[in-house]
Amino acid sequence: MTSQNRDKTKLGRREELPSRRLLDSPSRLIILCIAVLVISASGGVLLGNLLSKQDETTLVSSASAMAMQESPVVAISSPYEESEDLIDSPFTYNDFPQDETVEMQTTALDIRSSALILTHPPLVPKKTATDMQDPPWKKYAALAPPLKDKPLIAIVIDDVGLSRKRVDELVKLPALLTLAFLPYAPGLQGKADMARNRGHEVMLHMPMEPTDHHVDPGPDALLLGLSDEELRRRTRKNLDSFTGYVGVNNHMGSRFTANNDAMAIVLDMMAERGLLFLDSKTTAASVGYRLAVQRGMPSAKRDIFIDNVITEEAILKQLDKIEKVADRKGVAIAIGHPHLETISALKKWLPDARARGFLFIPISAVTALTFKG
Image 1 (tube, helix red, strand yellow):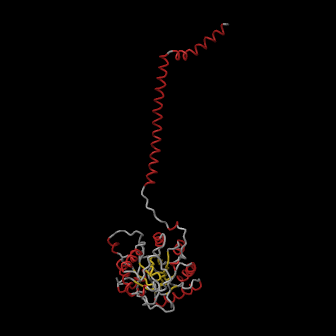
Image 2 (tube, rainbow, N blue to C red; image 1 turned 45 degrees about the vertical axis):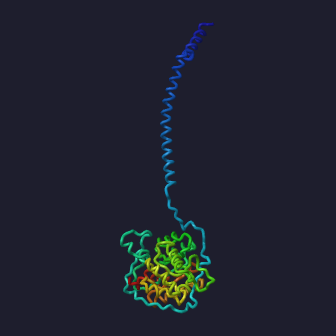
Image 3 (cartoon, one colour; image 1 turned 180 degrees about the vertical axis):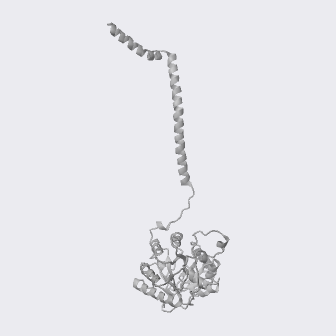
């Protein structure tokens, strides 16, 4: 072997010597293992701290999410989520009087000296002493314009609430309306709130027995065959069906409203709650308006039904009649229903009627003109 090769071999042995010596010596091997363990432990602690902080952050986020999910949430039935269109319910049959040509005898009102301005309160009125003393017919009254020397018209739409789409179309009409909601309508409170939020006034449309016994006025209707106890129970249930309304008018009821004793029971309950009463006058024999006045209730009665015949042409003719009544008496009350033809006719007529000088007011403003309480 040459000297050059011997030198290379010695150099390789020297390069391998530290590792061989470390592995060949038990004590050195133990030292190496201990060093590795110390280094691993230190790294593990550091890594553990890092991971624990990350886990802690994750746990906080998860706990926050769980807290949000588990927080008590009040479930509100939104009227905008409904898909039903129940306007053709059998309960929406209208109990029109037999002879609509008979003009209702109502007292002409001198509105020239009136300066009535009613306010539209929030949906949840403040619980002050003054507010608590205000009856619902004032507390929930819609904002009425200043009553100038103009003929006044109150448009009341009955049978409202069975179709969300129709409610939406009604509240978009270009004038203040009074919407009378059926107590058994689905999503009732949300629909009534929607109407009030758009500045319209809201009433309860109380189902009552018609003369035609083949016609069903709807669930929990007020019938003459009921005991006084059951009559009060049904009245109470209907009155409690939603909040934010100023008063009541009758749905059908050509038989029930002609009965003095039955109407007295119902009107006593309404009077106790501070409600107004609008007599729909489905029969000329109705005693509702007279009994309401006797009880000191804000009250009024209908002048004209605008959609006995459900065509746009016929409805426009009826609206022309209501203008004449308003011109003659100073104020007129028209009742219609949420038919597509009625909505279409009102959409055309309302702007023109306003341009001709008619002022549209809620039913509470009409009753306030004569109410002395």
